[in-house]
Length: 252
Image 1 (cartoon, helix red, strand yellow):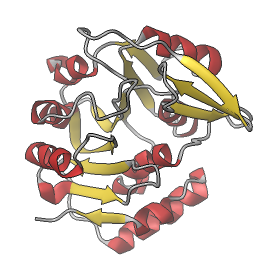
Image 2 (cartoon, rainbow, N blue to C red):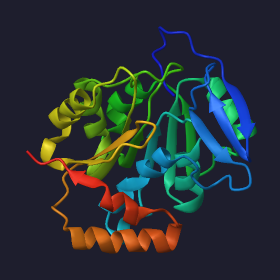
Image 3 (spheres, rainbow, N blue to C red):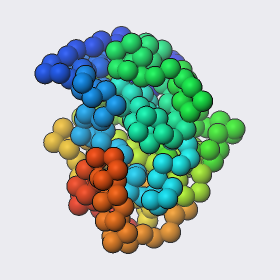
C-alpha cells in the first residue's frame, strides 16, 4: 500500500482464518496474507503471479541483482526475494503502521545488509535521480484502503519506473479495481516501456491482472521460457508453468 501524503493513511487491521493471517486497511478488503505455518511462502495467487518476472530473467541471473517493491502489502514478495531468492531487496511503503504490523505479525525481518524497508512515497522513490538504473526487478502493487484502482497509474509514474530499472530489468504490476480500466493502464505502461515489451497474465477470479514490462531485453522464445519455468518450479516450488500458459505477449 502507498498513498500520497495529502491523504489520510488508513488504519491497519489483522484477521485470521483457517491458518491464514490477513492484512486489511480498515476495511474487509484483503491487502495481503500469510499462511502462519509457512511465513516465507507466497499465499495469494495474484501475488504469486507478480513473481512471473522470474520467467523473463535468464537462469544465471535469476537470483542476482536488486529487487524493489513499491507497496509492501503483507510483505510476501519482499520476504520471498530476501529469504528464498536471497537478492538485495528494497521495499518502499508510505504507511509506517503497515511496516510495523508486517514486522510484528507477518514475519518481516529487520533490515540487514541485503534488506531495506523504507517509509517513503513510491513516486518519490521512483523519481529520485540517485535511484536511476538501480533496480533489476520492480514489483508495483499500490492500492489504498478502498482497493478501487491503483494509487499511482499515470504515464509519468511508469516513465519513472522505466528509469528506475537497469538495462535487462523487469517490472510486474498488479492491475485491479472496480473503477480501474485495464486498457487505459496498459496504454500508460506502453507509453513508457513500448507495447512490444509487455506481457499480460489472465486475470484471477478476484479480478487481479498482472502485467509484465521489460527494459532493453532481447526477444525470448517460448522454448526458452518453458525451460525457465521448469527451473523455477524445481528450485522454488512456484507454479511457473501455469504462469507461462496464461501469459500473452502484447505485441503491436
